[in-house]
Length: 80
Image (cartoon, rainbow, N blue to C red; front, top):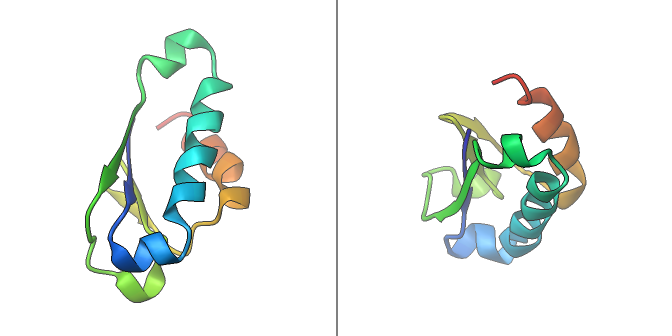
């Protein structure tokens, strides 16, 4: 699974650092075998600044992501 969190100016202002930390924590809570299959990184502008914080998971973009939503998003993506 490839997770990219926008760290462009708009998303940064909207809290991308907190979203990154929430994803780090969610990945750390998974079994080690699953952790090894997850790549977590930053990305510059995804072209949807007005909808940030934007997160791309395997090419699927999630908009207006908050730290509180991360566990739910990770659960949805568990099999994909």
